[in-house]
Length: 469
Image 1 (cartoon, rainbow, N blue to C red):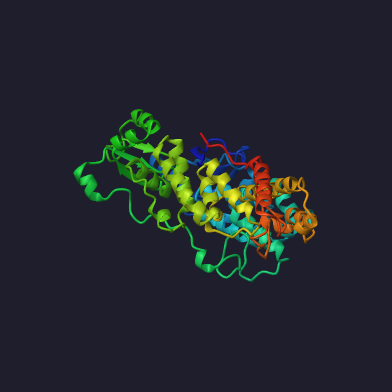
Image 2: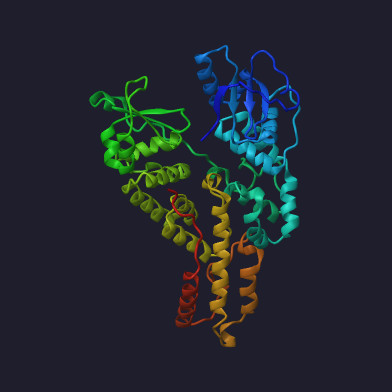
């Protein structure tokens, strides 16, 4: 949540360079976290960000003749210079490092400044040298890439979708369609069929229709964290659904323009709408239930919020959806389960994905999950294949049972780049957690080998974050 504040510009310490060191009509002072001040045209800030516009308009209503100063605690003077130069039409653009771009993007989203976020996205897409630097550092082995880049600072806040495209780009040695970009999936880029490259579609209707409020008038307003959306609701439904919301409601005071108490929650508009549906008992997530998985990320966010507010029946719904996805598409089940912090379901999905050594496919939910979600899946599969190879090596076979070089097949399936990214599917009839089983094994022996491999794989832990408080 944005932390900017506005107050009197009683003492000004201008140390910035042009054009921010000259006071002109319509200027206000913008102050960095380290106490450096910038003269900025207020109209530019108001146009750039609704958060700034709200702060400035509120202050002007108090006394339009008093000089104002906005403090932005998220940016120091160097970062604020870059931030303002992107917004200012008269300022020359500056070169940003990857870390600076990351910070600009984070703060731009916080203040809903689309000029900032759009500019950073454009800059990221043309910095192909970043990808080549990773390639040079970790070599051409995708196994080493996946193991090494988790701690690489430039990947800290990227998405699983971008991480998927990085590996896809390297596997193809940079031979990708002209429309290919790293930050977003584009039609025709080759990473997947355009038929599955849809985006999240918010739910079409509000959680209650107007007739419901005609029957029982609303007695509370629920406001989303960005201050952009407000929903009329009924206290009784929220109190019955959540003991945490009940405590928050009990502490509210009246005083809004509607005469109703206002409950402000940090969730955004779309998550808030679905969360309110949960409170009213609408736990049937129809999009997922009927095969439309474009809303998976939104559902996961809403379920995380439901867990935070202790709405227990929602978890049962999430588990049911994951269960259905396990049979249909373990990749969807994995990202859904991780997003909802359901470790058992996430582990089952990861295990299914690791059992058959086929390339992981792209799904739209990757665009809304952090890179570590996909990275941990890659690591888990590599670890299960290594454990399976260790269990397999303890067996001895007669020569007629192993016509091929079993040891070399096992080694390549565990350590080669196909463990993480591959263009050719393996033979499902002989592969089991990366191990090539001899083709002439008797049924009893094959069962014994698979049981031993399963026991070894059971000991591999999938890393997953704990539920946030």
